[in-house]
Structure formats: C-alpha cells, structure tokens
Length: 111
Image 1: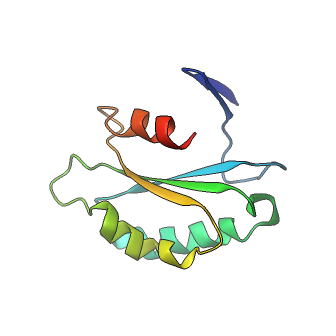
Image 2 (image 1 turned 45 degrees about the vertical axis):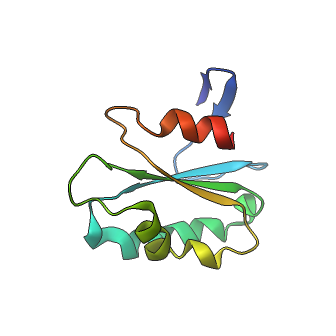
Image 3 (image 1 turned 180 degrees about the vertical axis):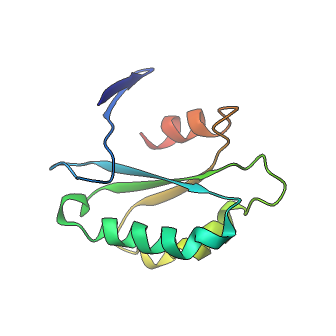
C-alpha cells in the first residue's frame, strides 16, 4: 500500500511478506505489554535476518507511552536487544499513536 505523508512517500506492507529493495522497517511495540517482549524480540530478530531486509534501517516505535506503566525507550532497547545490531542503523522513538506524539519527529529525523 503506497502512502504519502508530508513529502515522504513510503510503501506499507504486513510482515507476512517482504519486498525486494526494502529501505526501512518500522517495528511498533506496545510499551505497556511487558509479557510479550520476548516474543517481540524474537520476531524482530527473525525479520532482520531475512535477506530482503539486510540493508534496511530499523525504526522502533515504543508506542503507548501515555500509559503509566509503559517502559521507556532505554528499557525497550535492552529488552529488544537493539545494541547487538552493530552492523545496522537503528533508532527508537517513544510514541503515542492516539495523540500522534513522537510520530512526526521520527519521520522528520529518520526518513
């Protein structure tokens, strides 16, 4: 699905299949759901090992930051093992999808 936001054009697809020449991957996590981080980490690393995503920049949205028990970006970085991605450009952005907080900044800085 092709989307245009401001001056940025990007194609959106579900993780069920990867396209060739993918330049970036946005991985959204529920910062409040501590019970699923092992599953999220495993899925993220599985996707990053795909040949089609070898050169893709990773942008992690640490979503639901408006909730009182949400993990901060540093804690999520550790839980997802992002520091182990030494050969890949990655960035984590705290976000709140319901208010839009953090979304605009992430695209301005990294897209």
